[in-house]
Image (cartoon, rainbow, N blue to C red; front, side, top):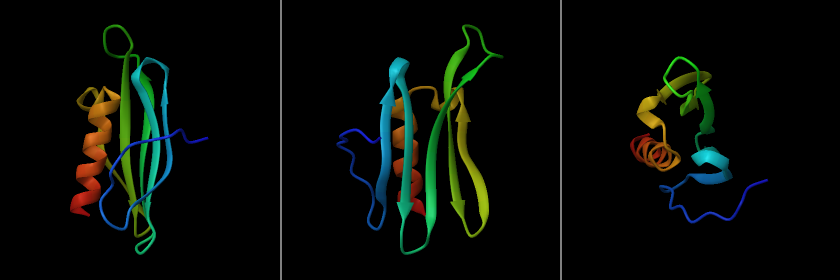
Length: 92
């Protein structure tokens, strides 16, 4: 279930799910109804990095294809993953 969120998304995009879980993880789904595009943020644990680092994967599904926008340590923190997602929505 989505929690209350205070996030401004670009025009035509809606927040379908937004949930900050423990340890700075973010699970989110954004949709652009006019185009049918979907942007997802999914957390995962990276066992290849020291300390089993928490990471996020941001994917953009459009026109029957899935593009990985960012993943791994570059979007380790939930706030940074959210920022990258908003920037991606603004340019697509």
